[in-house]
Image (cartoon, rainbow, N blue to C red; front, top):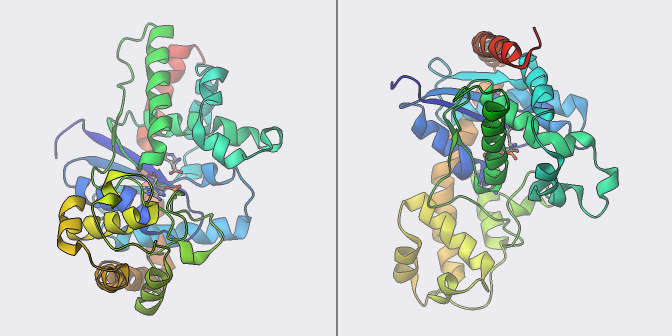
Length: 334
Ligand code: AMP
Ligand code: TRP
């Protein structure tokens, strides 16, 4: 392992993980764990910025832990922990509340999307959410952050906070500015019902996403019912943005096979989507079902999962508390 290459990333424990989480984040975690020291965090404090059920939030912690391990993250060599079990996150977020500028937050597109038409009624936490995210990352002085495309703007804000903090306190290079690691081939998986919206846990229709725990029949059904247009597969899918659903299916196929989108289109040129969807369904079953089965198996052993989080929390606290102490000295809070 290369020293001082450290990863921190987070996932909200708000429901079933889906194909977007898998290709946008988890698959990258699995690949990167060999090269980096990794901290994977269940962002339950981010999850309470919108309406939620306390009991469901708690239940989902073990579900999400199981999903990370089932996908291939080795809990012995990586730190998997729950955000709220390390109080330093909230403390540093407060310090960064005083570093970040209101104007920076007002530009965040995720806030605009999640707050919808009635911004005044959104929680303050939803607005300051990216500040907590910056605290998550900088508390561990992470050098790299693997995330899906939707989190890129938050990462930029985190970098701005690091730079401003270093300048304000004349703390040259105290925080390194972390680099995002965004998957090249599939950074954004879209909803199966609407190719202009990202696949999401919060979308009402379960048909819009492939969950990691879906069984083979359900995967086939969702792909078959997935929206497409009446045209056959052709180059036009890549050339314009007029066929978003078609593009999404080709993109998923490309991620599953490791082939370029252009090559997938060349191979399937002129064919109907009905045929393509059969093959796509089979590929998805091959990839997702073994993970889903492992999630179910792991969930039947909560003692094992809780131990992972307990060990993770201890390791995370050690690093976080040491760094927080230094930060508090710099800002004059000791
Ligand atoms: P969340 O479930 O919102 O906490 O997201 C956890 C991780 O999955 C983050 O790195 C996101 O960027 C990524 N992610 C979530 N939805 C998608 C999607 N539809 N496509 C690609 N990545 C996603
Ligand atoms: N905001 C991220 C999401 O919803 C989750 C998250 C919280 C995160 N803290 C983080 C991701 C720190 C990367 C680094 O997807």
